[in-house]
Amino acid sequence: MFIEHPCYDAKAHFKIGRIHLPVAPFCNIQCNYCSRKLRVNDNRPGISNEILTPKKALAKTKKALALDPRIKIVAIAGPGDPLANSTTIETFKLIKEDIPHVNFCLSTNGLNLVDQIDDLCKVGVKFITVTLNTIDPKIGAKIYSFVKYKCKIYTGEEAASLLLNRQIEGIKKAVQAGILVKINSVLIPEINMEHLPEVAERLSKIGVHIMNIMPLIPIGKFKDLRPPNTNELKTTREKCEVYIRQWYLCKQCRADAIGVPGEEKASQLQIDACPINSIKAMLACRH
Ligand code: SF4
Ligand code: SF4
Image (cartoon, rainbow, N blue to C red; front, side, top):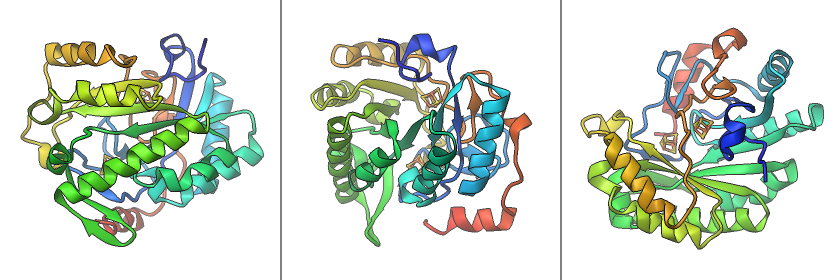
């Protein structure tokens, strides 16, 4: 079966385009490998040239589709967590009214997924990626600085356990709703490398479609940790593939990537951004 999404089907990866709409600046957790930035040239998650309002996101989507008809997927992937921002659903609703034929996708840390599945289904989201790096709260305590849930800040194993339970609950509900779920797992050699096959086994039991193991980019609090070498990445993927299909083509894209992966055209599609000071304030205010 051909899946018309560049990151769920290897045959689609070089033919189908996606647009990432950076409408979600806030996050509700702090991963130790995350450093979100605006207007820098890095090509990695958490980076965007701008934060768009839903209206500007619609305008940008129309412009992108006119320039590149291969774009079939409209996605929200940050730069914060899409489900920690009400602008995510607003944007999908607005685009659905105007361009009903596109398919929607989002990536999330999963903390708020279970609460928002019904709204996401209503608006027509077909693909969801959840970043899940461990099923062991002891390991999670090393990866997450904090989790903010219902106005309370959790840390350590309590935070990791809360996040994990809600991720699993959300994934199960998404699968039951007919959404194709991909899991992103960041491979951090000294922290979760030996553990990822256990994660893969668990994921295979709850209906996850595919797993994408991404090498650590050493930034943020993990700036002094090393990324996995090619052999470690390959071996870990092979061990996980025993349990669940693996995705090998991820480019670790920016939150404003546009086009067929690897052929991004973000620079030619920029639309006026919010004033930089208000963006800085938004990025800072949840941490
Ligand atoms: Fe950064 Fe995403 Fe983690 Fe939030 S969930 S801290 S945006 S990597
Ligand atoms: Fe696809 Fe990876 Fe880019 Fe997401 S980050 S759009 S999975 S290539």
